[in-house]
Length: 201
Image 1 (cartoon, rainbow, N blue to C red):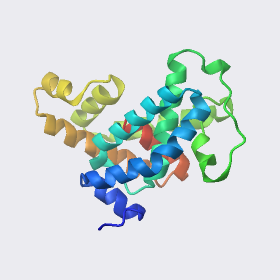
Image 2 (spheres, rainbow, N blue to C red; image 1 turned 120 degrees about the vertical axis):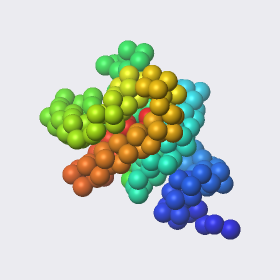
Image 3 (tube, one colour; image 1 turned 30 degrees about the vertical axis):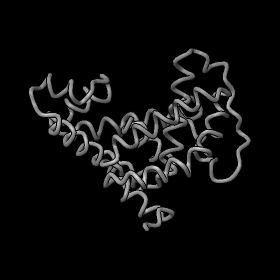
């Protein structure tokens, strides 16, 4: 029986589509992620829905995952999901996130997007995203913009551009690798994780 407690083995198994590995990941991390999400939302049902959606997105994008901490990625995705929900209901200005954190989860609360102190970092990251986008081929850039910025599904992109869904998926996967290669050596792990979590949504 495969030992999924090894992070590298777990990541590789999930990338290859191993349902048992994914089930192991869900069972091990769901309780921690739920406790974590509750700190933001105070609503167990909404927290559950956001976590479920994050696991679903992770599974859908499994083939594009890079060799990073899958636990860190999950926490970043859940955090982003919670904050997006808060923004959506227009109460983010009134919401106070507890900054008294413990242990390794400290990094997962990093939120330079909402902190004026980190505006320069946010602007810098926007510029870095532009640099990567400018290096893409015209077709890759077009597909990525339609997917990540216009919110179109792969099938919709394929129909619009008159290409196969597989071609769309390959272009997006290639673009994600370009972003990963660009950011992983330029920034600390926590910021890199945030960027990757945003990209695979």
